[in-house]
Length: 311
Image (cartoon, one colour):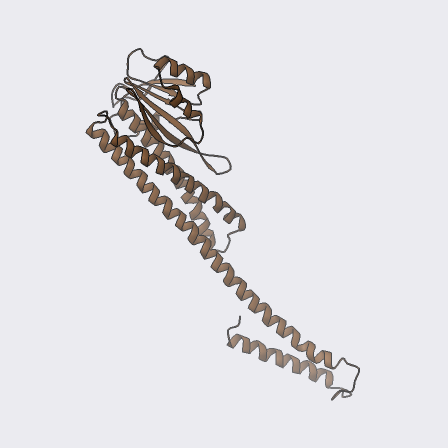
């Protein structure tokens, strides 16, 4: 669906308008754009169809291309699925003759999130609007990473009470996949931002270049955060593996001692159960003596095992 926004001064809010302005200074936003809407945008603004059609490729990575006086900047926007997976779709930003166009086959960035940028954003200065969209997209990845970090922290807290389950480790597979997916997209966005700076074509002023550097620095910080979270996941997995192995060893030692304690009486009971002549076999106190002797032997073995810290 196509929507049109205007923002004539930095202090104003984005105003949604019913139809595109004939003059420059409008943001054309195509969220969940259909093929027909994409074709209409291409024809109306005389865009390169080969580049624009790439927005329909769900695997399209961030990049920047120039064609005549038009700049095509591909970003990716994340969203969280019901199953907890981070999914991303390409967002194409087009700058041409003072008009700013965004196209996506999924959701687009909200004007409110773009307005949060500290830049003096107006629809008449498309380069600041582009940087605002880039900042909003980066902030979306930051939200996804923060959500994943909270999940890791919850699992780490449960580890302290030994309440962690196999489902948590299966969930770790999703967590690592989400972090790696975010890292791949942020790496590509960072490379695109560097190329955008190198190929500025005198369209970015000093203030915009500084803002672009800030966005690149923010992305680098998020990449460091992702590495830290991946390290936390690995540490939790290793810690629980160590705890589980230690617990298993202790239980095996305990079972071994109990097996010995149970086996000792059977040795004597088995001998005096044989149909042969045995010492004290005809004495009336033999049963009590055998039982008492086995109890003493069991206690000696038990105390010896405790002294040797077998369990």
